[in-house]
Image (cartoon, rainbow over all chains, first blue to last red; front, top):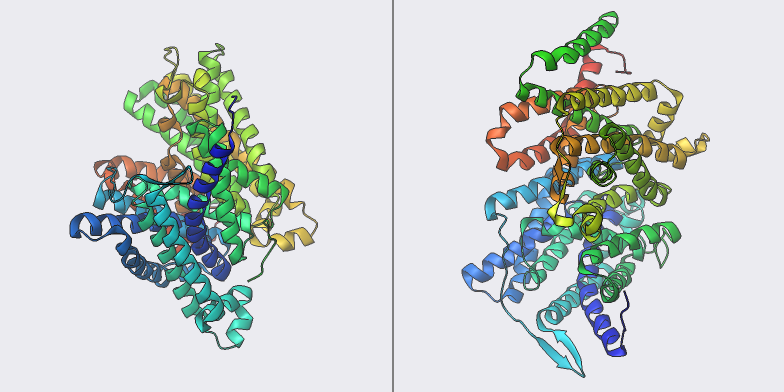
Length: 292
Length: 306
């Protein structure tokens, strides 16, 4: 395949890559928080994102609410779902071997997708809100993607302020560094686990709500997001929360740049090859291990 | 109890061997399906049940075997038994590619890598359209080999179960289970955990590869959707978990019970099938992590090596 890449094309894909990367970073931060705090990889992270997308879809099409205004609603709704899942099921496997938590969240994931199929059917749905693009200095910037990026950047920034500045955030980071020491310092670890799971589900929901205006909504849309979020965490270094930002941007950029050279079928493979390469070369992530 | 087990097993095997001469077409086909699920669930158990490294994408090995076998039959004119072995080899080759980077590390890397593998293979199949037929699928020359395939599939189920028994009763198996219980301790005892995990993965990939190639030959037509569905992975996981992961006959028990239940009861409610399987996974993990056989072993003091 001979593709001549002009600087303009490169600039274009870099912009698209950054826009996509913002969403990756936000969604992956949720998965990373659960992993950091509970040592659980939540396979149901993607399906929770899917539920967020449906929340936006129904609020927009049935109640006529502006899709971007539904983001906080979807986050609140999925926060509750997350808390319930953690309280009802996941808390039982936090101390169990990894096998148990992986299988349990896998079971939850299958059940959620099937419930969505039963409740919403497998039809592709779309929220038509803004289409088109702004042209800035010869670069086309997709309007829905740009707004979604700004929202994601805002939510991520607020999340970091929460993690860095508030007592709750400190408790979350402390639990993630050492549960025992956090407990000794008076942190209610069970409560932190519950809130973290809810918060992470809310981040996934925000991703879904924003994606609703960008891509087609269907029950199986989330699966690939569990995988990609995990990849972002590996890129940034597990347990390293700022690393998720870098990982997200990197994944977005790599995918977009690869799309210049590859057919659309192969572009799905890019993320996978990236994961295998990182695991081979630098399994502790680009920024290195755990620094919360 | 122990003395009765071997004769009883032989009797069952003998009955299954003569079954195609007396059974109906539907019956033979169903038993063959049970054989396949025994082989698949038993194979999943070798890596995930014994070492604790969960594979969320074992259907990838099934699909790789199906495509390798089908291509060799359709394009190179190989006889199907040989193509079935090649299907197993192709799956083992794929397992090396995945296992080498992912199993060197402890942690969930392997599980997630397997989760994404399916999509990758599906994309590759549609990319190499000339070889695989892409989304149009691949047709094999017609051939009625349903009875021989029944025997080969049965043989595969016996081999996978036999290999499981050999492993569980061997020092190799003990080392695998040590990795499952505490990988650091296993390393401290001098176990080369990476190569043990890799060996377990290769062994567990071979069975699905052969089963995939046999299924491709039996159905005479394959397409990406039919050989890479998530449902196959889910079903083998549910069967192995339900029967009892980490045991020899747990996956056998799970495959038989759940297949029969599926045919008799759930076939009427296909829409809630995944929900049911998800619920079974959740329930087994929380309520009986060692599965039905694990419970029986505890209650009736059965040997731990069944």
